[in-house]
Length: 284
Ligand code: AMP
Image 1 (cartoon, rainbow, N blue to C red):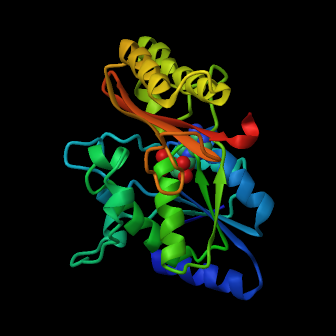
Image 2 (tube, rainbow, N blue to C red):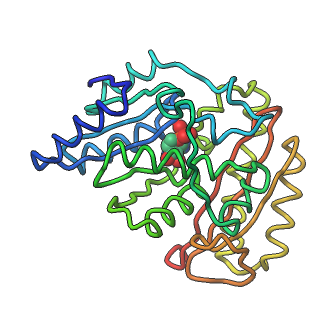
């Protein structure tokens, strides 16, 4: 695996790979890798000739009071993990290489997608995500882009962006990888104390219970959501949102439809965690 820091250099290398007829798979990450990230790398190596992983803690997607400076940075361990897999290139640009002085261009995402759910509590977050993803896609030019369903709103925003901007990349969404007890893997889980980790388990438990209730159609949407919220509030410090939405439009769903997403964001201690479950008609 080759470590590359210079965007231009990677762009040139990958141009050559594509000219030789190689397909490129790309996995953008912020590092502090875990099995969730690795599942994306494995999927890419199965489906492409060349796999590129990026590790870049993108400042433009963090708000002023958020954890940009505290976000875990463990590059050496990440490299070791990636070396055990079939990743061909690791791209770790500096902030100044991505946003040099005078940088002036940002991707504006419709408020309908960017100012709801996580976006309501993280103003500017999806503008930063969309901007860095467009930059990374222009640098890497992949056939396939791998995203985890864990960051569901991100998947919706990026899928829409790829469609809207006529990008040629195929978006491949991989299932959320969980710990044995159900906790969704996250780089931020390392911040949880043992007691907080126990309480964080409520998040996946409540999501799966809500899914079960909705599938059985024994409990209506309002009652399912109310029960989930009250259970969550007993275990976590703060529930930012708990919503049942249409996966493509992110608009709240009030009655049963073919595909739905149940999403939540909660603070356990000082750590903000997100999780979701998807409900399909075929789950019935
Ligand atoms: P991050 O490093 O948090 O920006 O995540 C990089 C990519 O890994 C995103 O597409 C995430 O959705 C994905 N990812 C993070 N956690 C998981 C997980 N538990 N299961 C599957 N994919 C994940």
